[in-house]
Image (cartoon, rainbow, N blue to C red):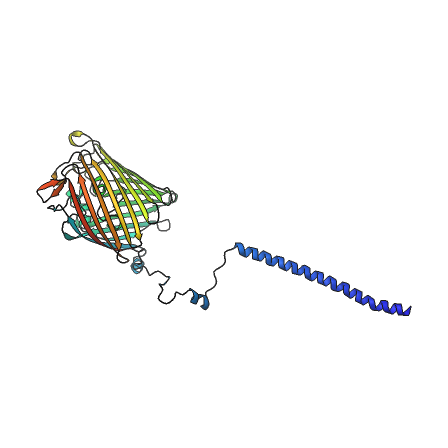
Length: 439
């Protein structure tokens, strides 16, 4: 009996200890399972969250540095940054455009049928331009643009309309654009410009580097105005639609010759990232003779379609129609034209471009005054091929072949006769300085 008690007394602590050890083990296992579950949750969260950028260290900096002789990843500094800073955020841009032109007809007195590249067998200055531009937005509602030019292009640009007779005083003959801007707090912002500005019509502009070809098109100098003086208001609804309204003196007039005004509307639609369409209408009493006539209206419709098929291949089309309600003998006159463009970038420095146009000056209204005469039923067409090569970051070269034709003897040859065709070759150099050109 005593022996049994002793055995029981010895076995009891062992049993209690065994039970206690088993309970502790279960608790530890449960704790480990909870910790594993927490780790799984954190791993799942990391899989669905972008990794944060690692802090820069000596190791990561060394790994990111380019090998010896490799180009630096940081782009070169903006060459105009210092000037822009001094001007208080005003952008300064400029260009110098010179060319050598050859006309196989050897006309005398300049090739008036190509007013922007009119010289023959000589070097010529097409355009020197300087522009100061202060853009506007809601945070900075006041701005302006002031652009001056020198050379053949600005002479052809300004020596039109009533400004020929008025002889713009002083610097006015060199003024390409000059207007004040205000962003009115209406909706997303209504931009109002007052002064002299380029026309909304057409697929081309005065600066050759912004066009695909070196010479300007028939539609540019026969179908549309170059500029207007007055007011315009633009409202951008979203990244697809914008509308601009116009109230101006007329066509190519700083000083108006009548009290009538020309009104207009331009609608821009970015249909897709590749396709854009701009439709413009201008209408009002166009006083061509400068006699103060406020009578018959002139109506112009202009359509520009642009399509970027691939990063290298692009297309454009321009369609114009104009109607003068009364002209000679109080009869109406009209003209119409279409231009097609294609451009292919062989590589970042080389591109080729082509342009074809057909222009029907049915009543001789658009080409009236050329050689001091009218050319009724004048059907003009032209083909242009242009090779472009960027020689340096700011220097662009273009070599161009162009042939113009007509169904009437419209082109001067040798100063003594007129023929139905004209062939020209131009080689141009354009130096461009812009804030976004850092090469």
